[in-house]
Image 1 (cartoon, rainbow, N blue to C red):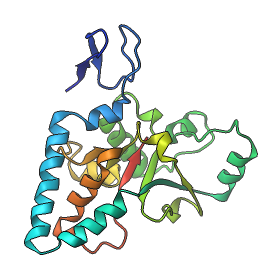
Image 2 (image 1 turned 90 degrees about the vertical axis):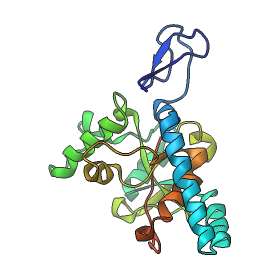
Image 3 (image 1 turned 45 degrees about the vertical axis):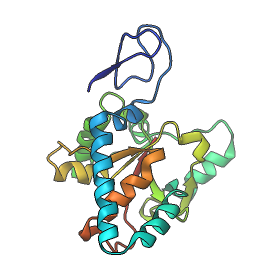
Image 4 (image 1 turned 45 degrees about the horizontal axis):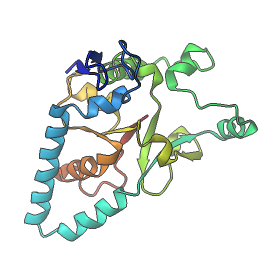
Length: 219
């Protein structure tokens, strides 16, 4: 689905726009709209129900219940170097830029390896026309981010991101490459449905017992 009707003027709105180009009314963020496409929601629900049935067949309903209660309190966390913390606390005028804004303003050089290209391809496929506006975080149960990105963890306030955040199955560049940049539906969710996505992923036998499975938050 590439467009949907505006709820005010009923003209078509491209799915990658967050406002109606006809009447100007604000709408949902495009990544949230993409996660709410019926095909995506339906596939996620089927994966989730299959996970519940699998848990029941193994007598693991109580374990699933505890897991889902924990995930319901999960946070979106970004890990960054200490120097970034210094910059942000220096003034309330400082903002947290997106990855592509840093490159565009030439305050960060690309790594120059295959991941620069893979990330651009994957992000454009998942966030067509608006990837430059997306900030990425990890879904965390303990408020600690991925230490490979820095020693300081920034925890996003849920009331500030819940309306604009979506959760993806894993690192999007890795996932998209593995699926030849045509990912199956049902592997992303709105913030409010992250419990279903996490449960569906960890129901897969190969993912059970992962010490710290990674889910990517986009907001």
